[in-house]
Image (cartoon, rainbow, N blue to C red; front, top):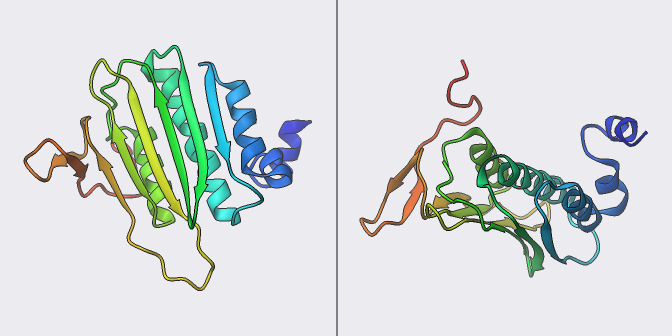
Length: 180
């Protein structure tokens, strides 16, 4: 029945449409294969594109943790700070996330679509932390520049300062590596 409701609301889960981002992220945490410690500090509803993007970012990040991180726990924080929504997903897994992988590239695309920013810190052997900031703005406001940055990891990234900071190289958007 829940799947039928999700289909009838498009591809978005019914709980997101009916109860908002906080409830939807709580549902994701309950279904996660890796135990989740959850911090939600969002009152009221956010603009629909922000809620949908944030939901799918958290969903994909938790999927990546379950598939690749070999983590025993993950912390998810969703917090509205002024005119931005801050998302943070941090696990205690193996680290070394490949920023060129389809999952992380998809997260970068979602953040960039809303002129958001994304930072990934994933040193091998020390877990992974993903921080995303999505602007919350009215429809008449011009979008700020979006960006994505990786501090540790491989694939699609380049050292831009010589000091080990890595930022998104010019990755093609749309088709994923290995897809024609």
